[in-house]
Image (cartoon, rainbow, N blue to C red):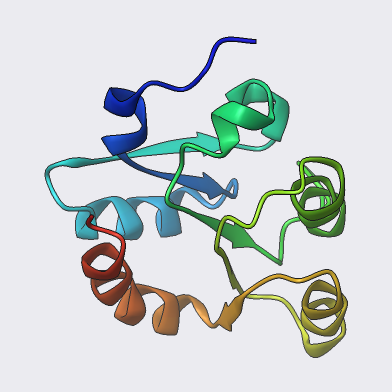
Length: 127
């Protein structure tokens, strides 16, 4: 397995997991020019665990169950990959949020709250 390079680590990238195209467009409108977003529905699309590690954070749709299971994704990240990448969730009801919280997801927002918070996260993870 090749090691991540410093150049790859310095790229400002986030993961977006949702099939909600309207919300995706709203997020894309807020992304700073020097950031890129990978839109996926399966972590395997990014490659092995060391590829996932290169992303600054993940935005996950908790209303999504057709394309992926959010609980499976967080368990894969935290238990299988053992990565502590920030996972910011939007949508979902209190039951799925509680399950995700127990599986160590980081923050929970409505869609509007997520959009309102993103500029702060882009600034915070702009290193």
